[in-house]
Image (tube, rainbow, N blue to C red; front, side, top):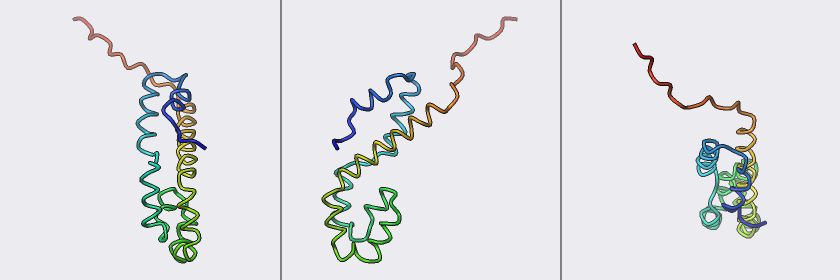
Length: 118
């Protein structure tokens, strides 16, 4: 699966207001993971499960921590598959943010009424 691109994000947020798009972009930027960063974490700290903990996969993180990556086997597998898992994670997070936006009630207008004249 290819990287979750900006074009895909634009298509996903096509029917939203500008305020909702800004909210989506801000929250996605805060919750998404970078492929290169996680690849480096997987290479250097993957035996201890740090990469799995960062991807919210606590069970496999604990397994890798206590078995040192199942004697290196899971560590090698994770290095080979980390970019695909990051893309899946980012798409899932984007879908969760969109679901939350679609369930939220519409925001009241933000225009300020002029003060009453006396």
